[in-house]
Length: 425
Ligand SMILES: Cc1ncc(COP(=O)(O)O)c(C=O)c1O
Image 1 (spheres, helix red, strand yellow):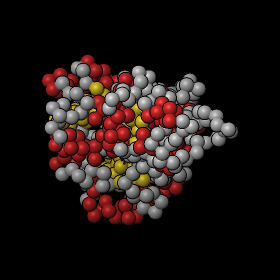
Image 2 (image 1 turned 135 degrees about the vertical axis):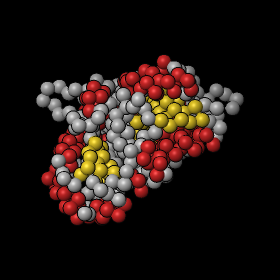
Image 3 (image 1 turned 90 degrees about the vertical axis):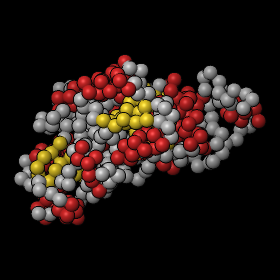
Image 4 (image 1 turned 90 degrees about the horizontal axis):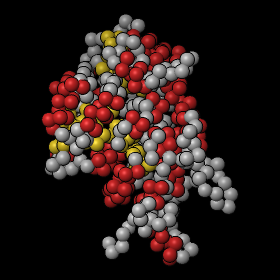
């Protein structure tokens, strides 16, 4: 390339920055307005239109050239983004308290991009929590070593052990989810971020489970935040999308890698995610209230061996969760998210399948964060890539189920769980 492609102030990051009009507003207000109605054309549109054009042109060759060389904000070719995806990016930057965000085609693409951007590659070590989403586990364990990198997957809840490994191995990248999947262990995110930085590592937090409703990892020092936007942020089980948010410094590399890999989020998917986001705060309020009620119900159920929900005082890391997710002002309900995990007593695979087949309302489906309640059997779905030993080492037994509690009426949820538990015996 004979000419420098980007100026010192590249517009591709300017474009995707947090929406300054709403930075100081409450999350509920940010969800509705951030990223929308950014520039007035001949008239305003209340929601950003779906811009399906693959390419863009301007009044003069010079105007196009200014966009190609990033001297002016705009669009050239939709693999680099569209006005619809930009609106979503501005909204997510605002919600996460990040400087800039890139959306992409899935949560897996987001994790992959974040790892590549943070420097994972030949001869570099990724230190990853062993309780991450199954496909991320497999990616870190197999893809990066195949490309000449190294990886260590370990339990991040023992901070002394973690520090010992970080000090000895000096990883390039540290990657974790704050509430683990599916065991709901709580990782002391502020302590891990601080520790990783002390030893020179770059930190990626996958905030899919916790969401900015519970935690904004960038604001406690994380370098990158990745999301499966397909989950709580979009919320309606009708879109596959991902995002990576970060500081301005990390963004150019992220942008370049995304364009070269080509895992762009299309305008239709971006629009669906943006529309879903409008009710994110409202949905989370109900998700959290329902999850606490379901957890209490299951904990007192005679056919249940164990319930793990970070909002229950019986959860081993309840106090850590209280500290990290912040005590709410007087009268405001606590925020512990929608994800819980339970174990049916004396359960083998056949009983587990009978339980799933007996559910009438709750969907036995392999995702999370939808408005609908969902139950998965991790050993045969999200974590099916893992062998028996690996499953046991992260606490997944033949009776373990993960539930993503939806926004249905709580009595209907209790009734469905109760009848399925009785029917599977
Ligand atoms: C925590 C977490 N991260 C990343 C992903 C991958 O997201 P996607 O399915 O959008 O690729 C998932 C998917 O379930 C997930 O649960």
